[in-house]
Length: 465
Image (tube, rainbow, N blue to C red; front, side, top):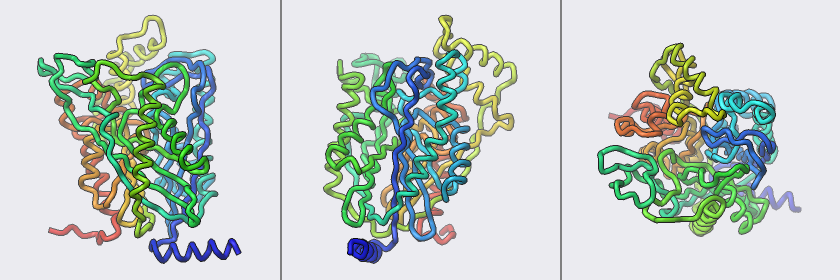
């Protein structure tokens, strides 16, 4: 009798929502071993403990013959080599094409260090533990996809959004001397104003079973996941958000957090003389966002069509070419990042950039954008790198879909920072870190918009003039 009732509910839902949507979800623990190296961009700290576990959280979406997935990992980024391995493993162990899986990092700074340059500089047992972890990580991420696919079940989808203005701040400032500075310091009298916006939208994509049991809440918000420092692994404020929503909706519901474009947005309120720090501040932010999600639940709107489509678009970004000698000198700098004779920070930033640029002898850095869409109402965009907020806002502005959710640190590997063109003429840390020439961010934005137009259900392949 129960199976007959579920079938009737499924048939009714298909008639009401227009598609036979099925959803699967899974969370796999990816916490590194204590004693391995922590991330934090240029980090060489050896971890001393685990404050809270980190995860790879996957959602698989299916309608008709189309199947796609999004995986959010509590990592600072996902290196190109790891993405390639996950795609290869995923195509072997699941039915999903690698190009139809958006691999995304939350940009959690208190996760593992995975770049060989920094691990080799640390050396010893911490390097050994980290390398073993990096070797195992693609299998763990693939396991999350596999388990989510095995969990596929009929579901309904809903969308909502609210705004939150009190926890995120554009960190690039115009100074009185006409220079531009990242994080100028609290109440700095030399700071004139911030040089960009924030994205206050808290997007909520909610899935439930046909008998109205919560399955997944996907939350997207643009804010650097760099609140907690220290020497313990943690998912930072997205972990708090997930625990608060589990308290409210039950442990069976999976909360997946993806970061909006937040390369120039962090939690530091420069107009206050003080604020909470560390885990206390992460708890405050996570709790505030959980409250906003609970508010958004009250205005959930059902998706009238849930036809799943997915695609990707390769983009080659022009880079400044570097000589073999420059790469050699940069390598010498990177060997010392964990020593007592550690080079100046700016030398390390430039050296890492030079080594990355030296890998591509044709002057082009391969990248991509991705998208998963549901009917004509919702688009999930995978945008690479630590992207400036203006990039995500531009995609949202020009998307044909009613609600577009842009997920940074996605795609085929880390690009470091992705500043918009204007920022290159202002300078600053993010620009010095960028691997490509001015205009690269806009190339990615245009590619994402073109892809969304291509995936839009009513697009007939013609350009109207």
